[in-house]
Image (cartoon, rainbow over all chains, first blue to last red):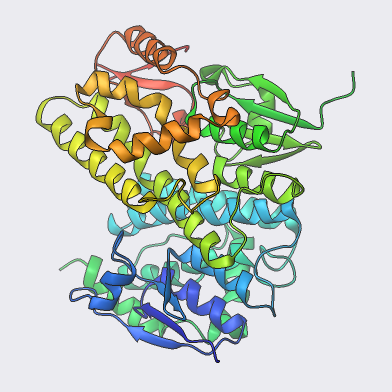
Length: 217
Length: 248
């Protein structure tokens, strides 16, 4: 019997995008169930009663929530292109950086964006970016995952794509190339990976979203 | 003496450090425990965790692993021959990760607020904390442990908070057992495991530690200066609007 795979999400969410990239990397056939977050489906509320959020992956009727949990699940169930390293130590490092994205980087970027580039908020975002810049410098590779993208690159999708869109929408600078040359180069390479290109929403939609949500009247 | 293969940088009352100690005990791993002086962080700690400068840090053959839940998974994946901590099938494993993540996102902040805020704010915080515990209690249900018959990763993530309950029940003047009897029954079941009972400090000892720390600040309101990036994680607190350093 064929696998039934559904992904509940919205196209503009960087968290949903992580799951989409993982599914596309593994070439998994799935149905995208577009949710209206102001009017959540009964299924979404049933599948994720704890957070009532997207993304939710439903595999043969079994739901999995939280984007990083979903990506690890996809990697464990479907063989093919590996998303996490095999070695236990390298795996721990990958999980560490993925958690860093959610615990430190994302909140700092969000503050910087919602404050329209207020100095202290941007300073904190730069602190987070500096750790990523250093990590790329130390690794000396094209991606956080080495020659190929891995969990860390996928978890940093919002840095590669959403940050640039926010900069354009609000006329602010968050990720200056001269200060973060490695991270900027990584962003350009990352968004041009086939699996990533196939998964990203249209840029103008994200720019429009930022203008609407955070733009000055 | 040759350096230990496994070293743990930790702080005895930390519920996050306790998670790692339980995992190491479950696997029967010998290790060198190094108690850390948190306001005065050692060069070793700063070198091994330059990003967060926090405990616990596991150092295995000279290489550091940070973040308690990540360390527990690393221990499980490296010492595979005994006491598996993760479920064997991917779906149940994903559920275990989800619930450990829920504990990380929700329990610490809610617990702290329930004991340190005052008046109406504290009542609201207590209510929120109990709601979170009820969600966890609901997930355990009639099962002996989070994921079924076997003690594991998700249990480890939550049970280390159990020794802190007495402190916040006393400060907040409420009984967690009264609100969530099945959760306390689960905690007591976990405490029957040597790895847990030998790791968790006595609840009264935790209470004494917390009250001593609070009295050193000389003020009922403890506000950790999380937002001041130069001081993050360096044992600096706000007292009457001024920055002070304390030693635990």
